[in-house]
Length: 132
Image 1 (tube, rainbow, N blue to C red):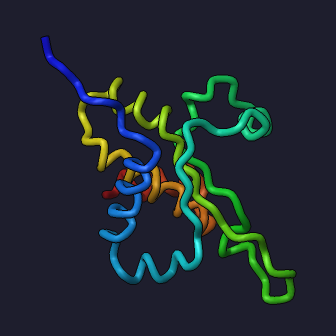
Image 2: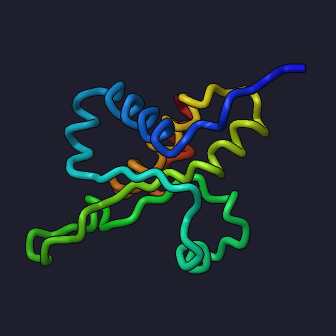
Image 3: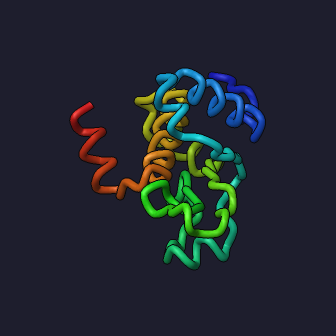
């Protein structure tokens, strides 16, 4: 019988996300600017409802804020942009897939959500990833 250790904690996933962000090219990190990163177990119920998502396991990450392309110097200072990573859905996808390292999946979700910070749509992000 194979014995597994405890599931990675919120802090463990935050550390993976920090390492993934630090490993990105310096120019990409610089352009990202002052984005706050948070790891939570699941998205809050009101967020899921707003997005029309019934199963909390379907949302692995979320960008919240005004994307860079929509900002204006004439606008009031926006709230800080945030990227949320949702631990339980990420772990669930990782376990179900079985073909990707957890570090790679965390990096994928993180970069996807940063893409939204840059103003990219899901379709644009998927097209970039397909070229990858």
